[in-house]
Length: 412
Image (tube, rainbow, N blue to C red; front, side, top):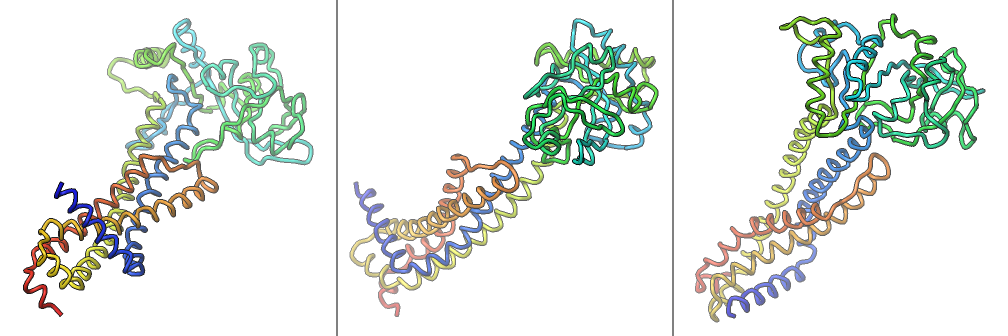
């Protein structure tokens, strides 16, 4: 019971001291406010980047293995990969035949061309020659119209499925279906519009600036089997659990298709979403570490400011400490009083920092990328504020608690 009364009394006195010095307390919290805003903004930005990453590359598919000449993340000698032979459509056909019944194989080949409708032009759209299996290996589907079908490929039909941004920039609100557009120097009839996927925040492709045409039409218009263009082969596993086994099968089949002897290194690359995730985690781990280091310095500076003010407060209230001790106050009461005062100052700074960080988060969400403050981040910010306050107040509190009451009463 005595401890509870001590705590209540110490909290009351600490609160009275803060109220009596509102201006000084507000200025003291500035360092804590800046540090908390930095911590929350760093964590919120990291979460926002993670969400943007997942949204941007959701079309890649976690159960899809991609075969290409170059790895998505190059480590080591670039020219070692650059000098590899390009993956061809013929090799894609052979791989599809070898994996028949075990996986869905979809080759694609791309180029950039201007796209025009009447007087409106999109200067550089990503033109992708693919098959009807594209929507099987990808999570994206047409919003209106239809996707490519096997007869489109068989008869090399001049048809296309356009990305959402292509539709908006060329047609506005008008219906694009069955309209003729120019893709490079060739005419193409729009048969579908893909659902909006959003642009990549990481320098990758803008999935809404893509146009899908039959790969056979791509060959006729832009060259394919003998043009030396890189072909990407997407192989969709029957299940997420089967992807590891499928990867080994693909490597074995591609080595047979390319006639590689035992002991020869692979001259092709196997890419998965995990490759991008690992690269992202490595980069973001370093960025987050540096960000938290900088914010930690801000909080340290803020904590030093609070400690300095608490030393001043202890000195100013020396006679008060002497009187309290003379009438029976214990060391722990004095100790708790100043610790509570430092903790309260930092908590107020933390709350102000959370409010300011919330406004910054709204600005980030409106201008840069999806971002939101989560409850765990808010609780962590409050906990950090409290810890900084306790650590900043404990040394001045010990100084006040250990003062001799007689010497304290003589202090002028």
